[in-house]
Amino acid sequence: MAAFSLATETRAEAAKCLELLKPYGAGLTEAVQYYVEHVLRFRNAPTVAEIIQRMVNDAKSLRRREQTVKELRNRLSRLTAQFGMRRLSTITLPELEGYLSNPDLSARTQVNDAVKMSQLYNYAIRHGWAESNLTDRLARPTPEDKEPAIFKPEQAAKALEHAPEFDLLPYVALGLFAGLRPTETQRLDWSAVRMGERSIIIGAEVAKKRTRRVVEISDTLAAWLAPYTKERGPIVDQVNFRKRLDALRMATKVEPWPANGFRHSFGSYHLAAYGDAIKTAGLMGHRDPGVLHNHYKALVTKTEAERFWALRPATPAANVIPMKQAAG
Image (cartoon, rainbow, N blue to C red; front, side, top):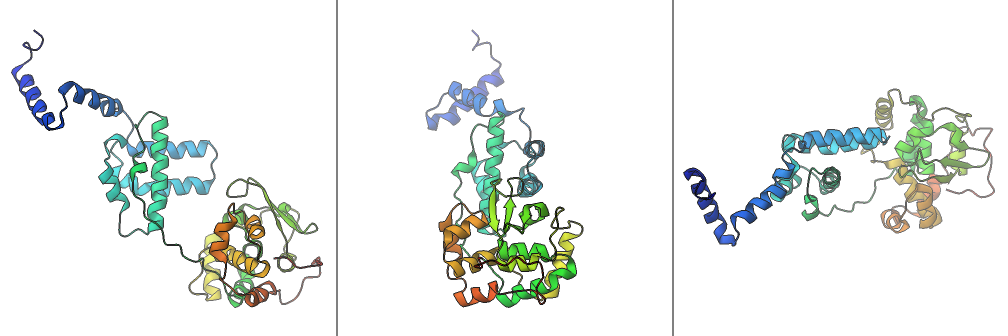
């Protein structure tokens, strides 16, 4: 009786739906149940733009580092522009594939974007706004494994020569001769630099992976740091930091300027000088010595490494504490 009481338009719609389902051997009830479970349950979920904003806000409230929050926001900004008003449950796999296969983006950028998208899906799943992580089904490109760019000894000397003009000598020296990450140096305080003990304490609050490590101060690094050391205070002045770093690049006339070149130079010259990938990896905070060995091996010769570690200020500082044996 309920079936006969349906309006003519409803019966006609049901017949049409059954005809559409016929090639798949599915019934109307099965189709409706699937639609309810996989579409309607997410109808009131936030839009992609809203989820991203909540994700960023949560990262801030959890005291994630500023760089982490910034990268999260920047990586997902393009996703917001394309799918911001949609719900994750409505985005199809072909749409995501088209989004990632942008020819203007490098393979590395595509992979990094896919990682952030995966984090977004997992965040939505935890909050009940999506059913599954669609990025798990994406075919991701393989980035080209490029050799890291480094400074030649004479280029490193130029950077050290001009760095005091822009109040950047400690920043440059710690990158070149201690292998610190740029963000680590910017967060580091002079109280962590123990010249008497010949060590630098990279605390969890400074290290990229929040894992504490100790970096030894070589004779080379000690010679460059000695005139600048003090008991406490930030090593890098953040006022106009980016502007001053750009000015240093211009002053050195090093073209092209190696990306993350100070740290990469340390890895290359230290490995060439001492041939100990495990030690070099430990000093740099790398978890996998094998990866470091593959990246830096044979980039420079032992002779070039000797020239690099022999770099000294024009006038040696009087308060440099000599070591029995220099260590990179």
